[in-house]
Image (cartoon, rainbow, N blue to C red; front, side):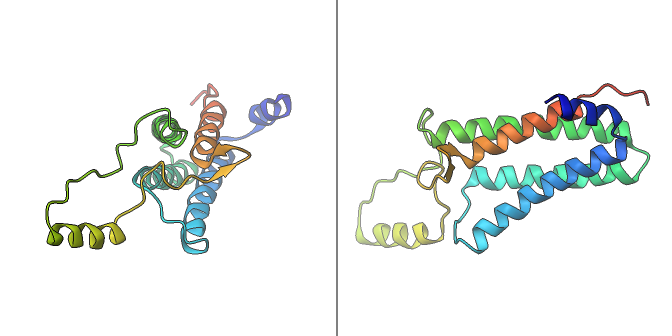
Length: 161
């Protein structure tokens, strides 16, 4: 941790933004990789997290290559806070500590309703608690939240602009 703080003290703003863009870009690439190669369809909250990291990637690139560094810094902080909140909620659902609101509950009254339910379920996304990827017993969404907290701490450096 001490090495990270020393690096942060020497790190120019452009490099900070590029590191932030690189990590968020890798996160988005990994989510597409897991979907396309491993056949793991994303749930709704996974898509929200992917969108937040895509937004963070774009804002960090704007901050790195423009003069809007202060605005970009604040927008990156807001995106990281939103990512932490979504990742925390997503992790709680995956650990079955919070009720999964993504599951659909319906009453089937006739055969036509049953057929439409079956056809619709093939096209629908999985719920958050059905398919959980874990690394060392920790859901990927929790790892994403921890990464966002670390990046937020890295970005919180006071600067003179």
